Image (cartoon, rainbow, N blue to C red; front, top):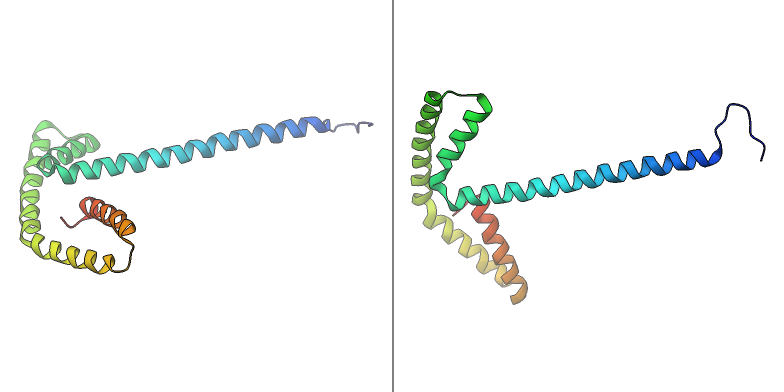
Amino acid sequence: MPRVAGSAPRHRWGRLLFVVAMWLTVFFAGGICGVIGHAYWLHATLLGMKQYPEKMPTKIADMIAWDYGLSPEQKAEVFAIFTEHHSRMQGLRKEHAPTMQKWNDELEEKISHILKPADFQRFRDRFREVNLIWGGL
C-alpha cells in the first residue's frame, strides 16, 4: 500500500492504541485496588474503635497532633478534652442501650417472619456487624 507523505504507518496507530489501552487498564485496576484497600482499612479502624472504646481518645489525640503539628502540651490538652467528651458519650450510650437493643430485637423479629431461616441468619449477622460499627450498641 503506498504511503502518503507525512502520515505514519497504520500499524503504529494500532500499537499506540494498545499501549494507551494497557495504561488505562493499569490505572483503573490500581484505582479499584486503592478503593478496596481503603474500605478494608476504614472497616477495620471503625470496628477497632467500637470494640476498644477506651483507646479512642488516645487515637484521636494522636491523629490531631500529627495532622496539625501540635506540641506535646497541646496534645495533652486535646487528649484531656477528648477523654472528657468520650466519657460523656459513653454514659449516654449506656443510658440508651436498653432502648436501642429493644428496637433492634423488634426489627430482627419482624424481619425473621419475612426471610427464610438461612437468609435471616445471614441478615442478622450482617445487621449486627453494621450496627456495631456505625451505631447502636
